[in-house]
Length: 79
Image (tube, rainbow, N blue to C red; front, side, top):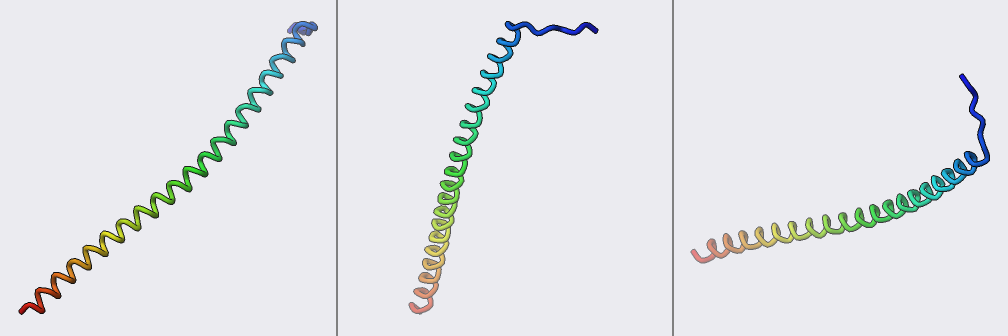
């Protein structure tokens, strides 16, 4: 197997590629950090929506129970 000699031009191209890769890695790292923050915000929003939905469901059941009890009590006392 023949050993390949690196020329100055080849080394310069390699250095440029390394610089481009380093810049790309930095950008990816920034994007990952932004996505992590957005994910946290989305999680907080989802939790708030879930809690609000549960409150609405509880309110609906409470209103149904109150209406049912009122109807039964009214029917019993009219007799």
